[in-house]
Image 1 (cartoon, helix red, strand yellow):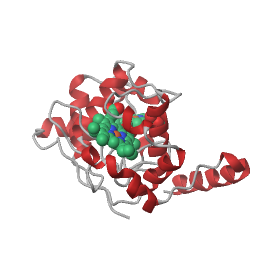
Image 2 (cartoon, rainbow, N blue to C red; image 1 turned 90 degrees about the vertical axis):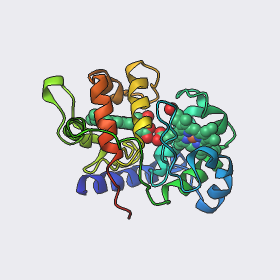
Image 3 (cartoon, helix red, strand yellow; image 1 turned 135 degrees about the vertical axis):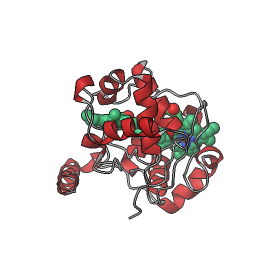
Length: 215
Ligand code: HEC
Ligand code: HEC
């Protein structure tokens, strides 16, 4: 936690120094109103939904506000492409983006679905990738970036524990196919390309079964 905290305070210092570049303040109350169109998919509690074999809706509840805001801006600018999500991002101006991000980030993280049918062997492989990585395949553990409980670290590394298995799988496949490339460093692209289809199902199932401690 110390590293995260010092990274956060460093960010604050840099943010203050940067003045106008400081991220826009979001208001959770206004955000709840602006999120009226989002509940159809992301649900009233921000839990989203796992859809077997389909396009799952990610959990937004408890996700980092600056990460949410960045993704919405990326959809709007077409840097992150998704036909379902883009029209809804397009409806929001910068203030509404900051507001919905503030709103969802302060909701308690919810449980995820999609890992229920995974067998022991698959879950063991998933746990290995998430917590220890696999040096034979040059796969770094997920937690080395996504934080000790894979619950997220700062605004750069989103929480992936207790996220729907279907959504995690879809994102990893999108990086494999170079369909998601909105992170300028493309850290996930190189990781996903080293993963087999079974690795993807394994880590998605295991992560979806982890619960996130509420703050
Ligand atoms: C019709 C269903 C639908 C609606 C309505 C919808 N979304 Fe989404 N949303 C999705 C899907 C599907 C994805 C995953 C897209 C992908 O795979 O890249 C997504 C992804 C996101 C993400 C990225 C999450 C992450 O972890 O990277 C954010 C943030 C988001 N939506 C916010 C919103 C907000 C705010 C609204 C309302 C203004 C909204 N969505 C309305 C379906 C929807
Ligand atoms: C070297 C650092 C690093 C490692 C290791 C890493 N990630 Fe990531 N991951 C990132 C970054 C950065 C992002 C955010 C990309 C963006 O801004 O769009 C991300 C995003 C994600 C997302 C998207 C979450 C969302 O809400 O949209 C998933 C899913 C994910 N990672 C899964 C994994 C898995 C599974 C592993 C382990 C096998 C892993 N990551 C290891 C850096 C990393």
